[in-house]
Image (cartoon, rainbow, N blue to C red):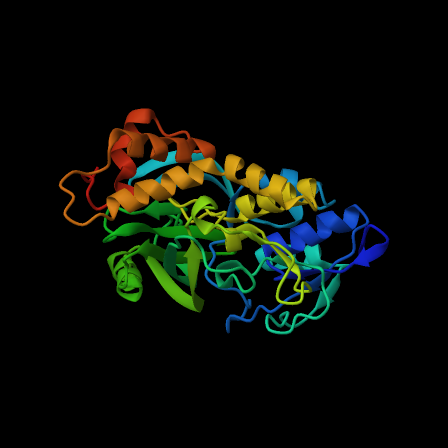
Length: 358
């Protein structure tokens, strides 16, 4: 609980994913108590929807802020990756996301069921961290969702060469790519996602068939999911004032994927959900300041979203414009991937069928 004037303010965090557990943890460090509601159950062994568990190593900075050490969650350090035939050094890694979420929620007032959106109780503030569901906020101004399918595979090389991390887009129809993220002990997340893409299973099967002479693939589990790549600007409103017919409905504040803090070009959202939660904690409880800060911090997501909209235009005769290619280059730099400028411009084919193949 928190003091507002002379009375205690009751706060609920709806959703115990990355953004929900992190904001709850940050507020707890400031002495602000919250009730955290975990409604996850995706029908998979890990209880999570499709997510590669990849993140920049800079995630360690966010974990240190809540007294956690990245070393305890590292599954594989992806020091280099293949991008449609080009090997580039990266500061990326895969993390044990389920373990991280368990540790982030440790010591918090965790309820193992979702918060009832129709009868949430007598909370004054509800933080909507329900991700793609956006259970408590009103609909986005203009939503954009990327469907995904991911397999967890045990991979054994036929020869001596192990399967390496990679992202492949030139043979994916529409706007999308196939990813390969190592999890250690010979296991990998292999998935595909894209906008206007409805052939996920066939694309993955084609990949396995094309590489059957090099590796044996043994399924462990699989999951589907949707990722909001709308950007915060197009995911407004991401706060609702206290009110209602009798003036008693709670104030709603969105955080993380529920307000679109996912990179539209790549679908990467873990580190941006952490940053969004950090901003919310720093601005708490000033939702106007929070809104301004989020829109400024993630303005680049709006520009990437607008590039996607351009590429999706019907009847367009040209490929990506110069500014679209520049945005792709900046995206790679933001992730720490040091692609040469000319290569980044040429390899925007990883996102668009309208670009020449390398």
